[in-house]
Structure formats: structure tokens, C-alpha cells
Picture (cartoon, helix red, strand yellow):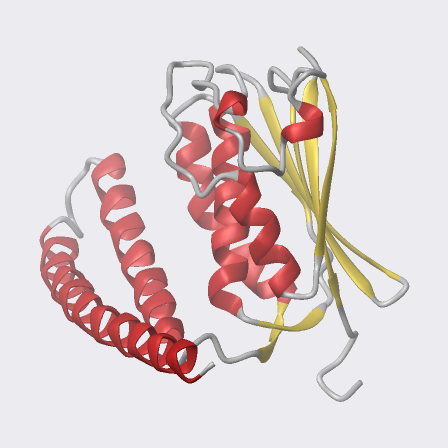
Length: 231
């Protein structure tokens, strides 16, 4: 037991040091990009402005993520509505690059969850990456958020190629036979559904899906929720 505690402590220290170094790199990129943003402020190319704004957003998210690593994934109460809306703003550009229509159904009221924002963002990002990866060009992805019975449920629905029935029993297992290239030969760069499931359960949440081959897939993530900061 003592050895395990030492190894865990050493691992945490290594993660914290690495996160600190990454924060320094991201901060420098953020600073350099601010100069670029200033230079292109009057530039007529809207796509260039959009790209610099995206770099800024990604840098800010990277700083949030590395801060979470330094803080050892401390749980906090946050607005899931706000967090998901912020991520969707980043997802839009990725969807546009594949001519995928991204629609949302997010309530205007805040839905609060007590969670670790860093791993939750990783789960959401990877579910969206998978939706884009397995949805053909000109397809559709819809992200919804609902609250029912003190649960917040996020759904990622796509009109993609679906999951073959032979894969479904193994989808959340450690099994490389379920790996497939995307509709445009995208490689598997995400965490893998096995790890996503483990991370969701560590957040005291649940993940499941519905899928019809050649018609599409919907992944659901459920978390304990509250309607205000005081409940």
C-alpha cells in the first residue's frame, strides 16, 4: 500500500510539472496569436479572422485544461449549460470543415452539475470528434441538453454510418477490432470509448447509446444535476 501511495504521489507530481510546462507553452502561443489578431483586425479575409479567433479559444481551453491538471481534478459546481455552449462554439468550425450541419437544443436556463470540468470536456470533445468522424460530408449532428429527475442528459446525435451490430457488444471494451477509419479515412485519434466510459463513471455519470447501421448514432451522457447553486 505504501509503495502504491508513493507511486501515485510521484505520478501526480509529474503530471503537475508537465501541466505547468504546457501552460507556459500555451501562454506563449496565446501571446503570439494576440499580435496576429491585431495585425489582421482590418484584413478583409474573414476566414483568417475566424482562424485566429479559434486559436485564441483553443488556447484558453488549453489553459483551463492544464489548470485542472495542476489542481488535481478538483470537483466544482459549474453551469453545464455554459460549459456545453462554449464547447459548441468550438465544434462549429470543425463541423463546417466537413460541410456538416450542426444544430443544438440547449435550454436558456442554467443547469448545474458538481463535476470535474477537465475530464468532462475531454469526454464531450471525443464524443463530438467521433460524430464528425463517422458522419459523411453534408450530414447532420445535433447536440441536446435536457434535465429530468435531477439528471442532466447530453445527447450527441448524428446521421452517420452507425455502429455494426457485431461491434455493439464490445463497444465499451478494450478491443481494437472495433476501430474503424472515418468516412473520409480519418484515423482514430480520440481516447477510445472504453476510456470515455471509464472517465464518465469516475464523474459518477452514465454513458449509453442507440445506433442503427447506415442510419446514425446517438450517444448519451447523464450526470447528477441541480437547478441552482444553492440546491
